Length: 108
Image (cartoon, rainbow, N blue to C red; front, top):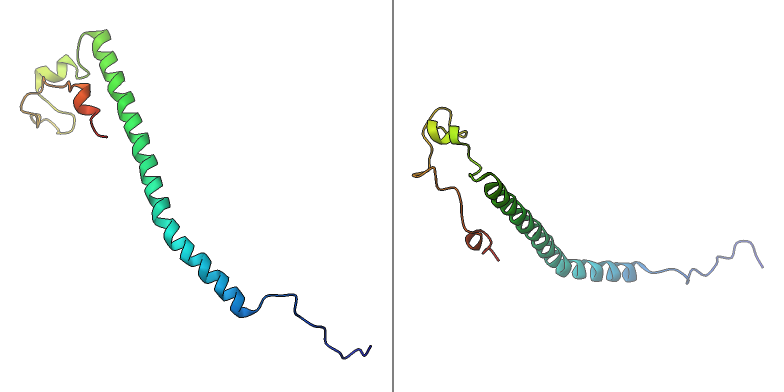
């Protein structure tokens, strides 16, 4: 054997084969990304729905245990809303603070 003979490089992939594989992967990723995004949004909505249900349950439990709503009696007497400094509440009737669970839970 001569030392200047080159080895046969038939064991690797050609540039054309590599480009075809990368193109195929990109096409598959193009279809998969919208599905992945939809699944992420659905998972976030499910978590939000569960958190809202828990919050509503805790508010109902507080109201039942304390025989009053979450808003304190002092707040109702002054007519002040914490969101507005010193002004009247934006609600027309500040005593209406309870919404039926059927209305709150009817999102999905």
